[in-house]
Image 1 (cartoon, rainbow, N blue to C red):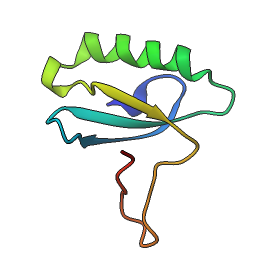
Image 2 (image 1 turned 45 degrees about the vertical axis):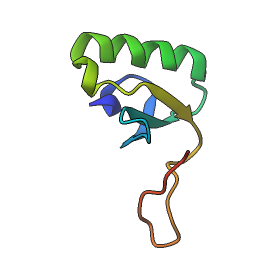
Image 3 (image 1 turned 90 degrees about the vertical axis):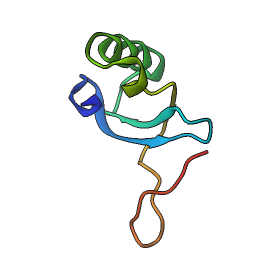
Length: 75
């Protein structure tokens, strides 16, 4: 669902060690991560229940993957 937010090129969501969700977001080129983060937070608050919303966001140029192409944890 977070991929539908304007400015998001890709996203991965995983369970954090504390039992809450975390998201790794790949912005479209030229997107300001701070503004995109606010847009994502607003979108998630309007459409997702509290347990469905990631509590931590990290931004980067590509979703972390292992050499085999599997999703890798980003800490």
